[in-house]
Length: 435
Ligand code: NAP
Image 1 (cartoon, rainbow, N blue to C red):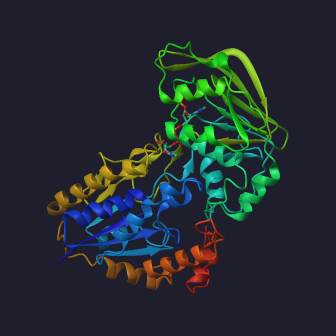
Image 2: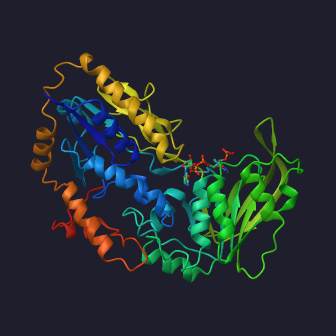
Image 3: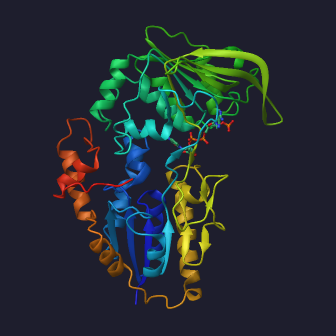
């Protein structure tokens, strides 16, 4: 009899695990449970809308999802619609692949002022994620993005690109309009360390050299003396330091050695107060030097935390599932950002998936009566009893097709951005979602 596996989360980590299981066993039945009606997790709602080539990885995931042994259950939230204990009773193995959807906080005064957004919320908003489409961010002509990782670069780039530069993206109309209306003049990308300590990818930095109406800039005083051994990112930052803005109206300013101390304002953001820093033996040391950056919006891009799921041990300090290299107990596993924390690119999840598949298959003997659990049958009975209309792979393909059909060229798709819209496409009334 086939072994049954439930994967919680339909993002890259979940799909690489499915792929690895299919590669290793012909006797496996896999169900992917996803809270949203749509699959592909961060590829759909995290990867920037102007990075369509990165999103092509879904073609591979789609092939995986089409395998006879794999079923998709969208619009099902584990922990609310079904519990982990119910899944553990029904399946031979359960894999948590639910990512890290929550923003880390700076933990400074003023963080709750209007006009302050975490990158999970802000990126979700400009990517049409149903949880954030109603964010209504208070965009401003001057924005500070805190963090020196690729997410900070994504946010900054989307804010400074012109309407024409976004034409071939799948950014929702509401976000495109709001950003255009804000007429953003300056985006400050803030690092608490220096130009040699960033997490920027060279390819993301190179894109900034091709912006139509924005000039990247760096204060030359922040750069280390030129010694001819620059890496690609530092070489680009040096180039930005020496470049005149010319005719371009917008500025993307890299501001280094600044640690946020408070977000200031009465009811909404009026500025960010920082301390100048220096880096000693890899540590950030703040100085007495206070620097105020006036701005009307702050986006923090400083990392993410997983959501605790009832029944799954949680490492609160690191904001991720508590596991022994992915194995929580035999039969229950974690992969991807839920396991590792928010590091690495899409492909980094592939080794996780392989390791998890091997753990599952290796542990089978240690779980009683493997292969005898009812799997899918039990899940569908539970969902049926609870009147939960799940979205199947065929349903998703209808939503997908409709999004592509209604797009205006050259946009690849026009996303549906609410549960109600998506479920209407597949002929289901939107169930009232509690809590
Ligand atoms: P990240 O690369 O870990 O960067 C987080 C940044 O936040 C770091 O610069 C960190 O500085 C800073 N930070 C943390 N706490 C801070 C604080 N209290 N005050 C000021 N700064 C603070 O994370 P990410 O940008 O969220 O990206 C997550 C992962 O997704 C990364 O692996 C990234 O490469 C990947 N990603 C890749 C792409 C792409 O390849 N195109 C696009 C998006 C995301 P310190 O160094 O000082 O801690």
